[in-house]
Amino acid sequence: MSAAEQLNSVKIRELRSTLADVLQQVEAGERVLIEKYNDPVAALVPMADFLALQRLDAWIKDAGLRQAAPPKEKRMAHRIVVTNISGGEGKTSITRELAFALVARGYKVALLDTDPQASLTKTLGLHDLHEGESRDRLPGFQAERTVLGVFQKESGEGRLGAPISVLGLDIWVSNDHLYGADALISGDLSRLGNLREAVDVVAAEYDFILIDTKPGITPLLNASVAAADHLIVPISGDKGTENLDKIVRLIKAARGFAPDIAVRMFVPNRVRGNTRVYKELLELMQSYSTVAPLSSQIRDSVLMMEAARARKGLVTYRPGSEVAQDVQRVAGDLLLLLGVSQPQPVERAR
Image (cartoon, rainbow, N blue to C red; front, side, top):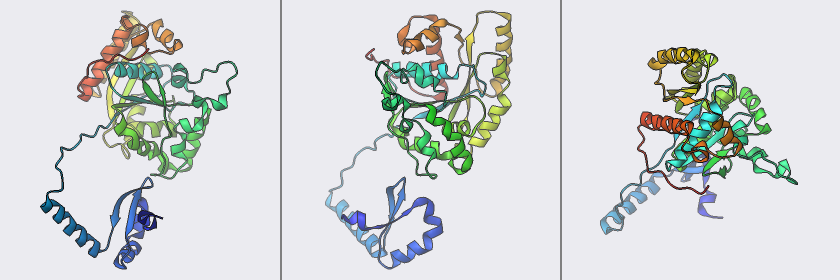
């Protein structure tokens, strides 16, 4: 057994209540590891050990053995949740196509499908069964590939399983197992922040993490919003304009876990030309500019559905189409709002 394995340890969440006992152990000459997510992050050691470490550190500096190196910049993902509460506003298509547009620009992108209906997962082909295949053996149907596991653990202990890599991005999928998430969260509301904590662990691996959400206000939606820092609201009709008050309440509830979360952009989606109805809708949406700006419009086009059925991103399925250019403009609007520098597009295998 290694020396590290012989050390006593304490979970960081338990430290406050056990600090007196832990300090007694240290005064008696023991060394105690402090753990977060089951990984050691610090240690409490006797003063004799501390003074010895100070002397060793000074000796290393004097001997010139420490090599100065520039600090490595740590990448942390922009965490974006797409929601409107209403169904039919285009949450999944906006999430999907923005992800592909960002991948085409050279960014590392991950998706979280938190809608048990799994529309996003399905449009990536991850529920497609071929002759002779069993659902149980297909990764897209496995519980451990969803976010469900993070809600089955105590706060601070849940971690995401391995994502599925597809079409140049990573995704934590959805399937029927995710229908159990609301009950898990309702049974212990401290787990509302579990998804955010789990995303914290993987955030340095990506430039963007986009979260697709379920319609309606449920504990899983609250947890999904709390996992993000930015909120995008797609609007495709009158119904989509009726939820601003509910979205504001969602954000207020999430700020206990995500202090900086806010609506960053409204996206006019499935816009049908110059019809009077849509002109009036856009005028109404302009009144939301005090909350967040409107992005460029995305026109109504059957190509969006065709790309999903072809299991491709619109920007690769029909890159020269008007609607693909709409999506690219919205992606550019998002990058501008977030103050993100734009790398050159990269060629990816199709």
